[in-house]
Image (cartoon, rainbow over all chains, first blue to last red; front, side):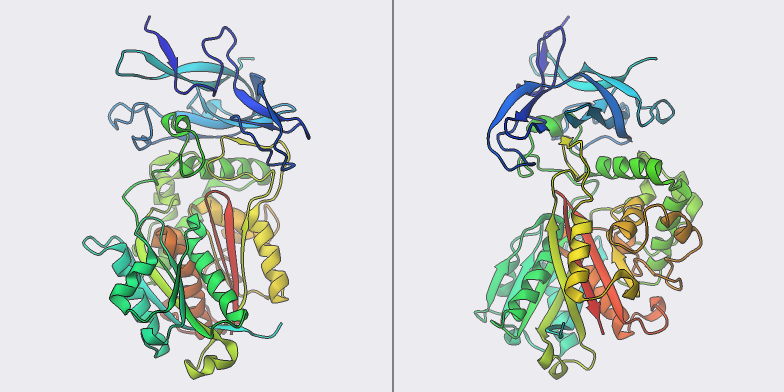
Length: 143
Length: 382
């Protein structure tokens, strides 16, 4: 199995048995943010701490990316002949924040607002050194 | 409120694709046409505000137009670049510093969806690398949620597009001038569910220039001055759902369009019921639907009936996007907001030809929206 490397350091915990998104929490007002940032857009304070966000939530809205994104900046497969559509949505993490993420499901008939979702790590591409570059996504929690 | 500022000249370079003509050249042509419309020369301009997103610094166009020494300020404010140029020109005249000046917007973008510069947008490289830096996704997700909450149908989204292309056939300046039926819109490629190819506008090219004067001097330049009653630009507040956002707050705020609209109506001293026609940001057909309510012209969800019975057609009760909007004209970012004002000036003068709104419209409204969550509104009257 190739070595797995995160698409970027500091976005999610990796390697990890239980990967989590890394965000910020405002020490003054409790507001959560993703990704990490130093200032709070809610109370305008500048005292935030880094926190791991919950890995489960509900689907707030979604779409399906039906055409290859421009590369760069996209690192995944942008070849029109082999491109596979992927889901994108906002997942509401209760008491924290809604995070935008790729979804493992791209079939509109199997996505619905309000469904339970959980965070997973998925392959994005292979880098020049043969490492598998991974990123975060959310998948439906099967009932 | 007394009239303080009037638009006395308008000029446009055709929207679309113009190989071999730079964005800047299209801006220059728009300026010359606006000057001709007002019967003025470049030497008469006391100041200029201008901008583009991707076609260069506006102030360099003085080397083509004439080195007259005027105050020329470049404006760069994302999708509200044109609206911000107009806002600045409006307030420059209101302040009493100058009597006569010009607002200019132009652009020229590469084909296909906008390539987002994540760094310039304050986003990490990972955001673009993982396939999230697409404005189209936001529009799909916003209307998907809206349809879920308010019962808007796919047929209504398709009707908005079909209307835009129909209005485009009546506009010689428009990019898309062939009608596309509701069924063809629905059958076109699904780009970002629930939005199909013909529900989206495309980045394009074009230029617009507007000449503004002190209202009490406007009749020196034109018999039909159009008065600028309000020009407002607002950014997002905490809790609003905007384009290119890796996360959004749990709590909900209505967004910059609602704020800009309320401020503009307050400034003009009128309400939505006094408006005869509107140009509303239609990056995609769902945006036009949502922006009807966000700008105060109906309640959320009422659009379904209004659009199904044709109220927003040129001959309808409340015409929207009479020139074909972004859908038929494309979106050259720097020029797009000014195109809306150009169209409203034409309509209020009674000079819109085949697409003229009947019964002498008196008040017209524009609304532009874009990244990273910014809205600009103007209200014009005869």
